[in-house]
Image (cartoon, rainbow, N blue to C red):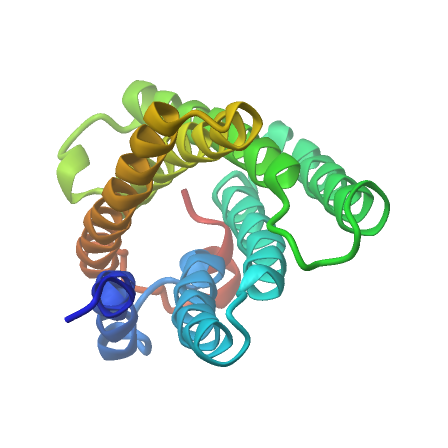
Length: 227
């Protein structure tokens, strides 16, 4: 098995939460719909990315489009969770900010979509890390019982791990490209390699979280805005 096949195999651990979601799709709360759409989009992105690498040797377009889709779906998920809170009005502004950064980088700062948008990916990761920490703090204060069986907590923990590492990864790639240093390049290669394991680990957390998503209630509106 070559390195590309191994990385693809690791990335397809996203099938774990995807299949878990399919098994429970009819019973789980609609409150988690953006997250389930995110998982389905992730599966599609990994497959299309693999095809792009095989035929075009470049999957930057796929990564750029998925990064924006991923960011907006996660922000939508936080909005659903805070539907009853006054802070919910801020989440659309985070989405607008991310869209603005994405458009600026891909249409003005860079020459098209042929390169991965590092500025957006770092900005996205920073915003989502802050939102994840905020949500975890909320749960620790208001619902600190059995957090390891709390889907909301597990999902936020997955977001936190993944996007913290994304900041490290993108920063390392940028420094390596600027310095052209062999030692730095070796460190970057190691960080990229470890990122596949981080991705697989987070997908396992997501899969477990799906099994703990609460069942939907009989009243659809209540189901949508429950905490």
